[in-house]
Length: 89
Image 1: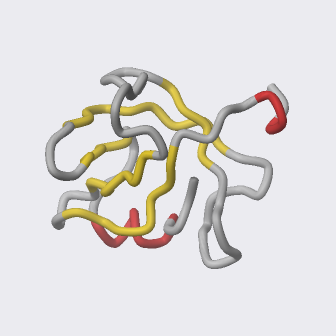
Image 2 (image 1 turned 30 degrees about the vertical axis):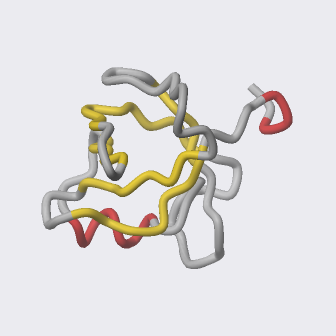
Image 3 (image 1 turned 30 degrees about the horizontal axis):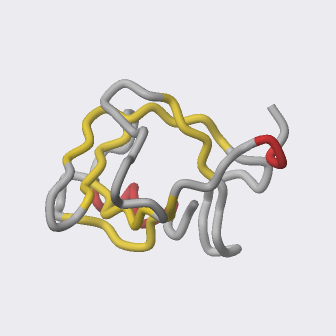
């Protein structure tokens, strides 16, 4: 799939807690299509991020909606691991 064919849903700039959860900033907070088990494409927002410039597929392990949208991606071990990937969209 080409990057031009994808729809940007939001971005992550901050970790949440110590377990590697991420605080998502969604562009559309009213009707999110994101759910547990969904695969999403992540792209780095800056050169600081260790996510590949061509993008990477990541699976949402768990997502919670409330005052903040908190997401746990499969394979992220802890906050330190997540911080190496930040920021991403």
